[in-house]
Image (cartoon, rainbow, N blue to C red; front, side, top):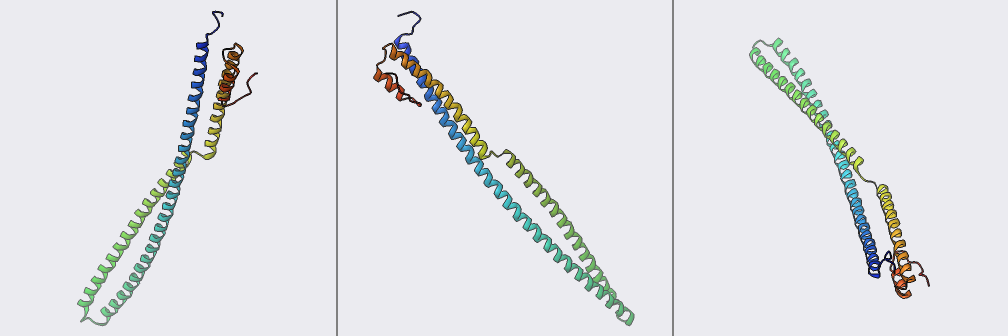
Length: 217
């Protein structure tokens, strides 16, 4: 045997190293499949969060509409109070013209009416201010929800993207496995030609490969 030719032990060690490499590649492929499945699960959970955000936004919109309806009803009540106050003012003026004896009582009643009108006006201003503040708050909340929804949608991984990545990685691993298999089969054929391995041993080694082929006879 020439000095440049490997010994039987070196050839067997080479086969074991190649088989170990194939097993590590298969383990890495399984781990990557698990990572892709976790990504798909995370994508589904994120989609559920978006749907819950949209439901909350719809409920908030309903609350705003109910507040606006309540504001309109309160405005109508204020207007009716102001009409009643105007009618009362007219009655007071007629009482003042018709009876000087009741001037003091009329003046007191007039002052009470003025106080009532001022209180109603103050209440109306306060209600308007509060509704204006609530409108600003709801607008800010709606803007934040829209911004969050846009961010989530742009960062969410789609199923088609995951499928493409999985197909690409699986193709890469299959190509690597095929190259390793060609090397192992070539080595087995050489060992069989040199009578280091019997035909039965060569056949058993080739049948254990991911891409089995018919051994030479």
